Image (cartoon, rainbow, N blue to C red; front, side):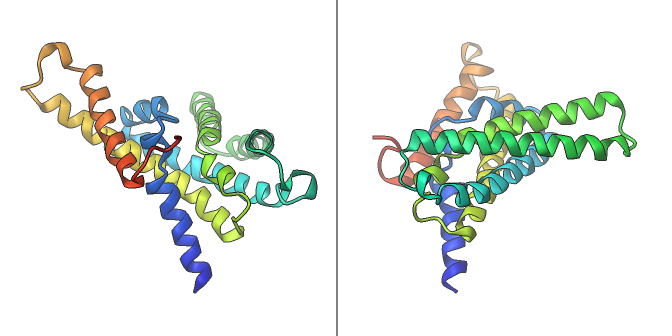
Length: 204
């Protein structure tokens, strides 16, 4: 029961309380691009969840090696980046083998592999909860962190997408604020709301 409670506590912490897209702006540009292409939101979020989960589990082992156990956050981030890079290259090799047997065209395969690369890159900017809590995370919590990162990105992207649609339909917005200015103001208000959940600034 304690393991289940710890799992959900870590999951909620990463996906809502420390949703870095909406509290720190990390990965916001990709969230906006994904929000403009709603058909890709779920796939991209699944990719982030996959990379986050696998990388967190491997780092859970690596960062408990005596040489890395008491390392600072910069070293931990470097280890996370190295492991993520390895996971990405192994995943791409496997995907290329699988895609060769699929009915996808070369263009579709290239597009999918490009999305995979972008997802893996965005995973590194969502890694801060794991790095911050690495000393106390168990295996179940590392899994929760990985899944939570994907859900955090999904929540942020869906909210931005909803905002885009509402802003497009709103005829009362002055012309000087239509488009990007209105969207940035909407995202800023979202960020304030999510940061307010913490009760204090994220970084200070």
